[in-house]
Image (cartoon, rainbow, N blue to C red; front, side):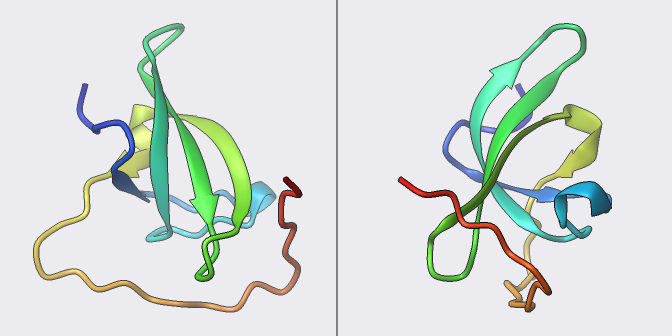
Amino acid sequence: MKFELYKEAVFARDLPERGIKKGDVATVIDYYDRPEPGYGLEVFDALGHTIDVLTVPETYLEPIREGERWNVRQEATQTIWAA
């Protein structure tokens, strides 16, 4: 498994249908090996509210690298999951 559970991973591509941009960070919450390797992810806003939970193939992700910085961007519309 390339990404550890409960650690952060970075999106390697835009997912416009989900409001995700390349470089956004998510927390890995599950691993799937069928039909292809992939991960369950939880995406949070800057205040720690869950804004999406999704599954993507492993190729959609890349690790956080040395020297990278976190960034904040405003989303035009945002859905926050209610607990």
